Image (cartoon, rainbow, N blue to C red):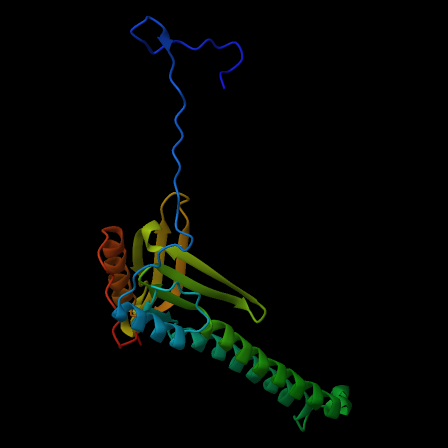
Length: 238
C-alpha cells in the first residue's frame, strides 16, 4: 500500500502509452522443523564422553572436550600449614609459660583447668581452619578445552564462581615465574587477556606454567585459524 502523500511513478509504458507500475514481490522461505544436527566425529565424541565422565561438574558442549586440567602447585599449601603450626605453637608456649611454670606465683594458676579447655578449643579451631583453607586452595582449577578456557574460583567455603572465556576472545596468554623458588620448583602464574573489554584473568601457583601456556597458545591459534584443535593426550600436568 503506498504511503500517504506518496505518488507512485511509472516504471514503464505499454504499447498504448499507458503507465506501468512496479508491484511488490513477496518471497517465502521455509525452514526445517528439526534443525540439522552438528556432525561429530567418533574421536571427538569419545573425547567428549571421557571428559564428561572425568569432570562431571563442567558444562561442556556436545563437541567440547578437555585438553588440559591445571591444578595449583602444592607449594602454596606450605604457607597455610606454616601459619597453622605457628599459631598452635604460640598458644602452647603461652599456656606452658603461664600455667606450667612451677616457679610462677601468678594468680592465673587457679584458672589452669579452664585455660586448658580453652587452649584445646583454640587448637581444634585452628586445625579446622587449616583444613578449610586447604580445601579452598585445592578447589581452584583451570581447564583448557578445544573451545574455551574454564576457571573455577573458590574464595571461601561458601563462595565459588566460574569464568568461561572462548578461545576466539583470547588476545594474549603468558606466564610469569618470579623468584628462585618458583623457578626451582617449576610453578608460576598464568595470565590471559581478552579482546574488546580488555579483561585480564590470572591463575596463580600453576604447575609447569610454560608447558600450560604452550598448550593454550597452540589451541588458540588452531581455533582462530579454523583448524581442528588437537585431541587431549592421556598425560595430565603434574
